[in-house]
Image (cartoon, one colour):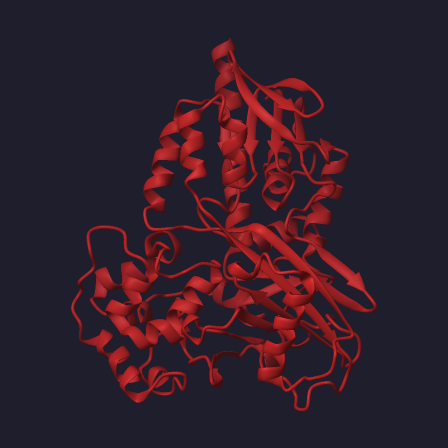
Length: 472
C-alpha cells in the first residue's frame, strides 16, 4: 500500500486517525511502508479541546476530564499507547451525582441508559413531587406509542414519564451530556436504546431492565463509569503525538483553506502552500469542514453546515483547604432548565479524581450555559462563584480561577440528524478518497470519536488498495 494521506485537524480524532493509518493492527508497531501521512492543525498545539493545565499542584482539564469505561475504543487506544496503568476511575466516594431543585437531591439509584428502571428508584427521586414520581411509573403501563418519525429527547421523556420527570431529571441529564436543549436534540441520534426499549417492550423501564450488559463492560466499570489518565486527559493526546512524531509529518499553526479535486487526487490548499493527496480525512468539526469542502463539494458543504454547534464556557475555581463549611458530597450536580440559572452544572473535580488538587484544597468547575458565552471573564467567574456558594456554602474568594471558552464546543444532534448523516454518506460516495471523522457525526464522547477515526482510517486503506489494484 502506498500514497499520501492528509488528515485535517489535530485533535483526538485526527491524531487517532493518523495513528490507525500507520498502525492498523495494535500488535504491529512498525508503520506501513510507503504510506505518507501529514496532519495539519490550525492551532499552535495538537490535542484540540483535550487540554490539561498543571499549576500550583492542581491538574486542570480544560475540556473533557474523562471518558466512558463501558465503550472499548478509548481503553484499547490507551492500552496500545502503554497508558493502561495510568488510568484511574472516579473515587468510590464521588460516584453519587445530584440534581438541584432548591437543595441538592441524589440521582436515583439503579439507572440503565440514564433512566431509572426500578419503581423504588422513582419513588425515592426526591427532586420530584409525589404526583411526579407516580406519573413516571405510568411508563410501566403505557403502551408503545413511538412515532414513525424522529422525536426529540424532551418529547419522548414527557410522553413516557411525564412533564415533571422530564423537566427536573431526564432532560437535564440526557440533554446535558450533549450541551444542548432536549426540545431540539434527536432521541434516535443521541440515545437510540431508549426508543428501542419502548418498541420492544412497550415500557421503557421494562425494556432497559432486560438489557444484558456484556461481562467485559461490567468489568470495565468496576473502577467507575468514567476513567481518566492520572495526570489528565492530555496524557492521551500527548502519547499519540509522541508516537506519531517519527512516523508522520505534523504541521501546527497551518490552516487548510480549501480542497479541490484534481483527477484521481485531491489538492490541498493551506495558508502556506498547496500540494496533492491521494486521500483526505477531515477530522475538523463539521462547521469548519464545510468551509474546506465548499468549492469542491457544495452540496456536502451545505449538509455539514446544517449541523449546529452550541457554545460553552467552563470556569475552574480553586479554593484553599477549609473553605467549604462542610465536606462536599459526590462529584457534582445538574441545574435543570426550569430553575432558570445561568450555570448548567458543577463538578467537584478534586472529589471526582485523585490528584486533581494538592492536599485538601478544592478544585471546582462550573459549566455556564451558551447564552453566557459572551460575558466578560470577571462576570463569568462571579456567576460561577455565586452558584457554588449557593450549593456548598463557600463564600471565600477563590485562590485562583481560569475561564475556558468554546464558541462551537459541542455539535448538536438535532431532530433529523440521522437523515442528514445518510445524505452526507451519499455525497461522500461520489467523492472517492474523502473521509470524515470526529464528534460531529455519530457520537460526542471520546470513545465514539476514536471509533470514528478508526472507521475513517479503514476507509482510507480500502480506497488506496482499490486505487492500486485499478492502476494495475
